[in-house]
Structures are given as C-alpha cells and as structure tokens.
Length: 235
Image (cartoon, rainbow, N blue to C red):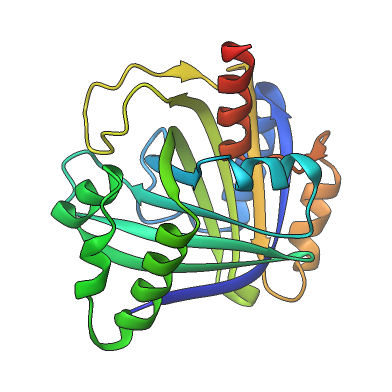
C-alpha cells in the first residue's frame, strides 16, 4: 500500500529554553505520538541525490518545484524501511511512501534499485516510478541524517507538531542499519527544529500558542543542512 500525504508545512528554529516551554504547552492540549518516549523516538534517513547534486542545488537556489528521495527507518534492527519521495508544490508538501523489506533497503543503499521492479499490486506503479527516476537521473546514496523527534498530533486537519533535536549526519557510510555510524552534528545542539504540518488551516488555539513563541521561521531542510556541512568540509 502506498501512503500519500498532502499538507502545508512550516519550520521554526527554537532555542532549548523556548523548546521546553512550548513543548509543555503543546503537551497540555494535544496527545503525544504513540512512539514518544521520555526523549521522543529516533529517526534515521538516507538521502539520495544525482551525481551532480541536483536536488541540493535546487534547494539552494530556491526552485519552487523540487523533490527529495530518501529511505527512512526508526530502528537499526528494523525489518523494513520506508522509501519516500517528498515534493514541494508551492506552500504544500506531497509525501508518498512505500514500505520496502530490509534486504531490499540494503540493496538500495548500495545503489542497486532493481528490487523495486519486483513490487506488485497497488505498490507497483510507485515502485516503478522510483526505479525509473533513480536510474535515469543517476541517483546515488549521499548522506545519512539522524535525530530525536518528539511528536504531538490532532486528528482535525491532520495536524502534526514535531520537535527535532540532536541532529547528526554522516557521508562516510551509507549503511542505514548500522548501530555504530560515525556521525557529526549538523547544527548547534542548543537549538531544536519545530515543524508544524497540517491540512487546509491550523486550529486557532494551536496557532495562538505558536504565535506566542519566540521563534524564527526557516526554510532549510535537514538534508540541506547535512549536505551544506559536507560541502564546507570539502572546501
């Protein structure tokens, strides 16, 4: 089954002190994600890009219609990963996801996309689209990004508020399931990325809390930050 989500998405940069205050307020009015622990839950994503880093430079140049392709898992011992294409369309984000088995995911991380041709049923069209895109545009695994996420949800308008911290990355290994990757900070650990995702409009009582927060809206993605760090290192 293909998961598809179309929604608006806003990102903000919070200092730790503001993060704790805002998280406390949000937790009073919205239920936490079922996977939340005391520190949230881990997310690890492997991002692909073309030989000449087309997706990175389109982000850098502010191209209106652009995409990211990634493999995402939530545990190094997971038996599957999610292959996702995320496309920006104006102020909306379209995300389509396909669950792939661990063995297939490992082959994808090695640049072998042929397992996508074996998917059938309602998964076949999206899998074939991913295969054709990644082969014809010469996509390669480029970077792995990992962080801790604390999430809160509201069913109305599919609202999802997330706090991401301890964002780290590596380009020295593309082993998505390795428990011991050598990773480096992507941004100052005193800061947290707040993401607000919703359909149509944001409920008033949530908007009021966000309006009271001392935060700066940002447009950069974790993929962009990780790649930017790599480019700076190589200069």
